[in-house]
Structures are given as structure tokens and as C-alpha cells.
Length: 440
Image (tube, rainbow, N blue to C red):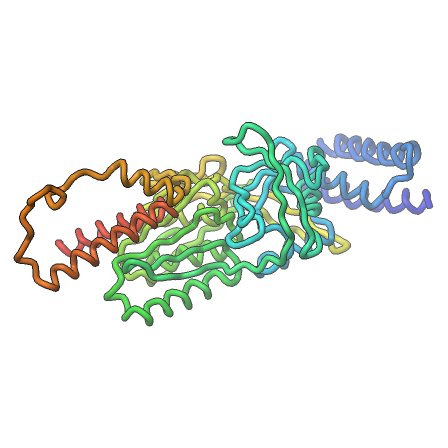
């Protein structure tokens, strides 16, 4: 058995050596030989001397993963199960908790929870650190291993321990695993505005958006009753580069959308827009926050650089690197960072993120009881409240109905601000912009 393993290891080392010598110059060959010899010797010693019999396949995979994870948080080894799950994820249906994660200082960090998933409903937030899974610490595990532990049979409970900056102590969250079937984009019509919520960038995103906008316009007498569009990219962890380019292209008539630049000067790709604006030049607001990452930042950066949209919210996550999935022998693969994203103006998104044009922090939800107290505290006497005040005897029925309609509209807006302050701000902004365009 040992001879067989040594022969297998020799083949692996030969493959690695030939790969390495195609990259390194002749003067570095000796160093490559030396380091591969060290690797082979270490493998032999571990296999012979470790206190327990080792799983050779797992040992080699861990070595490969060690190489990759030492590069950056997004490079890593994909064993068969993870590779298969990754291929399914891009099509919009998979099993798990519904969170996009990265690794930071050995812990799993939540990039963002996905809409209407178990993690989202359990209150997991962007920026949370996961330190334990079912009471077991995950410090020391690779990102793939930690993700594998979080996946499991649908319907089973999992307890994750979370460290949150705003909380003094770690706390446990119990989540029931479910099949995650993402609807990439949802479109609705509200207050004469088309609101497009994009949760992820996969093969469903463009069809969802186009079909959704078409349906909304048909139900509301077309574009003549639309004051503007809102593209909600908050807590969108990203996805396929091709879909990010396509979504940007929906609102741009020309120009560069994004470029990717690799290690060599020749490793550069540019993606440009084609003619056609889904919003037909109407005001466009893009909502972003710290959970907007990768493909979301490409879209936000492109629309901002072309002055096609106003960005509202908070600074994005700052993941501006390109990962290429490289298939390897035996139904495994590696995810390798191969390039960086740049916006049309040449800005690198990596570690910097995209800053909004208008910073609007999301306000925590206010209970109805607290809201009522706030209302009472703010209420001031008006003319109509004074004893003996004259009534307005000149109001027609239409004017009275208009006053009542305006009162109902204010109540709706107050409720909207209570539930989603950033969206309410965006709707107000579009209303102002539409009035300015009418006056022009």
C-alpha cells in the first residue's frame, strides 16, 4: 500500500514539477525541485509516523487548500461535493441556510443573508462573524469545510454562534436548513415608481427583471404613469460577472461597463454597453449597503461613473476580485483569484467598495407603540385645534377628498419610513426629480 501511495505521490510531484517549470525560469528550477522534495519528504513522514493512520486523499486535498487559502480569502479548494454545489448555486437552487460568506481572521464572515431564506428570517445580518457551528469551534477550518458543516439535510436544525459588533456578547441562532430557491429579481410598482429588487446575479436575473418590468408596465398603463426606477442591490452578495454586465447594460446606451485586469498586461478584458435603456431615461436610484458585493458593486460603479443613477445608502462591501473555477482531475476544482474589477473611470473596487452619492443609514425598525409616542410628542396645535376657530366654508367635495387622500398618503409614507428608511428616501428623491423634470 505504501509503495502504491509513494508512486501516486511521485506522479503528483512530477505533474506539479512540470507545471512549475513552465512558469519559473531555469534559474528557479533548483528551488522548485528543493521545495517539492521537502513536500514529498513531509508527506512520507506524516504517512509513516503520525500517531494515527491518515486519510491520504484528505491530506493531499488539505495541502492544496493550504496553498490556495494562503493567497486570499476567496481562493480555495473545491472537493467533489462543494464543486457540485457551486455549479448548482449559479442556477438558483441549492440546500443550506441562505448566506453568502467569506473568511476573515480564521472565522466565517457573513457577506449578506439572501432574501427570504432561513438565515434571513432568523435575523442573520451582513458583517456577522460565525464562530461555532452546533457548539463546535470553526477556527482552523477552511472556508469550504465550514460551509460544508453548515449544509445538511433539509429540515434539520443547526445552531450557529454569532459575534456581532453591536452586541456585547456572542449569541446563538437556531436555523432550520431548507432548500434555497432564489428568485433572482422581483419587480413591483409603488407610488408611480418601478422598484426592482435584485437578490443575486444568476441565470434567472435578466429574465426575472425583463418579465417583471413588462408585467408592471402592462398593469399600470405603461411608462406614462412611471416617475422613475429604483434598483435595490442591498445585501446582494454578487454572482456571475456576465449577469452583472447584462444588468448594467439594461440602463446604459453606450460606454464601458467594467474591465478586469490580471497579472500580465495582456490579461485584460473590457465589457461595453449596447444601445437601449429599459428605463427610457427616467430617473434611476440604486440602493446599496455593506452587504452589496462583487457583481452588485460592478453594476453600482458602472451606473455611477456614467452618471446614469444616483446611489443611495451606505458603502459597499469591497470585493473587487475575479475568481476563476479551474476543474482538476477527479471531480474536484479550485477557485483561484485571477483578476481585479475596475469601474469605467478606472476605480478599483477591491477593499475600497463603492461609496453612495447620498449616504443614508438604515434606521432600526420602530414599533407601532413607540411610533405613536413619537407622534404625540411631535404634535403641535394648529389653527383648527383652537377654540372658536373659523371653519373653511369654501371647500368643495373634491377638495375635501383631496385632503383626505393626502392624509392617507402621508400615513403610508410614515409607515414606509418605519419599515425601510432607505427605500422611503429613494422614493422621495424620485418624486423630487420628477417634479423638476416636469417644471423644465
